[in-house]
Image (cartoon, rainbow, N blue to C red):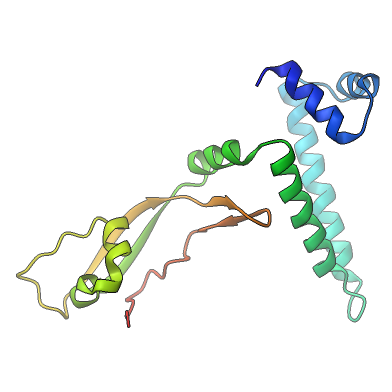
Length: 165
């Protein structure tokens, strides 16, 4: 999408008129340093708001409601500005990790482990007994999911011996 089209979409959805949008760009800047400063400020504001909501204490703890509102905002912003593809590219590039999984050969061989065998590129060794353990690794990364959150964060698949039913 061209820069001009992105700008028009941004101010249209923000409810501002064209001059407000142009004024904002002049005041806040579009250079890399200005963008980095804005991102730091935004992260700081969000953290302060979350801490303030938590400090309200029971029964007035506002953190759950603020979290839900934030999740809704994330979901709407990603949808409105069509950010999901870019988010997933960034997550793959910057948050990739190696996930390890250890199971017995018996568990690796079970029918219900087919998806794991594929993900971890399991190659059976018929000379290994069912009780022998095998640790395999795979490259992975979180994905942006519904509700404005990350899915498949590191450690979701246990890194210890897994018993499959």
